[in-house]
Amino acid sequence: MTANRRPVIVGVDGSPAGLGAVRWAADEAVRHGKPLRITHALGVPGPFEQPFEQVVDEHDIALDAATEARGWYPGLHITTSTWHGSPAHVLVEESRHASLVVVGSRRTGGFRSLLVGSVGLQLAARAYCPVLIVHNAERWAAPESPLPRQPIVVGFDGSAHSDFAVGLAFSEAATRGVELVAVRAWREQARRWGRGADLTRLAAAVRDALAADLEPWQAKYPTVPVGLRAVRGTAAPVLLAEGSDALMVVLGPRGRGGLDDVRLGSVTQQVLDHASIPVLIAQHA
Image (cartoon, rainbow, N blue to C red; front, side):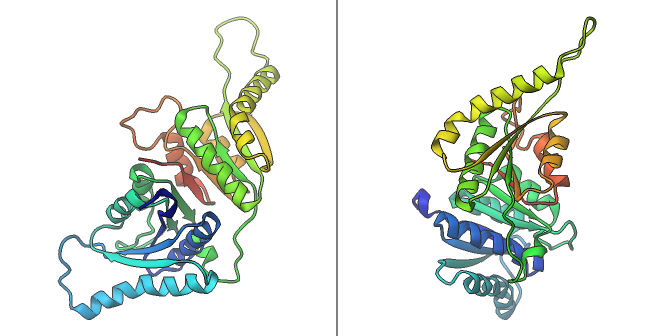
């Protein structure tokens, strides 16, 4: 499968939150010129031993979601699949051949629910492509609920992982026609004696460094309006505050200083745990 035909994959479980995730996934597929694949996981390993008609009922979950998506976007190419196995395992495996995986989160759910936080965290940590986790996704299950058009916030600390996130954020902002706000959190170094740090000067230096790091991306996406935010504080609270009214927050799976064997950094995990808006994790193989 060529890279430009890799589908957007969305996981469903028959809930309103799953349908809201389909809404976002279909929108992503249309804007980026990708097919959409709607996937349902049965939640049980090995051969499925229930009668065949019950398997058909399970696959109806994906088929019903596809019917809704075709109503929203009649020209979109959509396929469906139903798999044995846990939702996290199924979606991680599906991500090997995807351009994006989308799941909804409603913060609650039963034992079989696809949309519990642990599945989103596993997918964000182990997927082979970017992952969009749509918090409180049931908000967009109804066809009359328009998707938001606020600015996109991206956390950028200058690391390779966050550089990939910036590329994704610029692409999202360009296809949506919205502003991109790049955020860098900073803290002054502790001093044992002497005068305190000039905080205004430090903030200006961080902002200048952020602007320089963004120059190649701004040259690639000259039509995207860009805001720069150098904010004093620790990264996770800063990003949550800056993204409180955003369309989405875009992050790398881990930031500067992250270890190769650490799949999900503490900042990214904190934002995922506490954000109320969609979070796009710039995961890749």
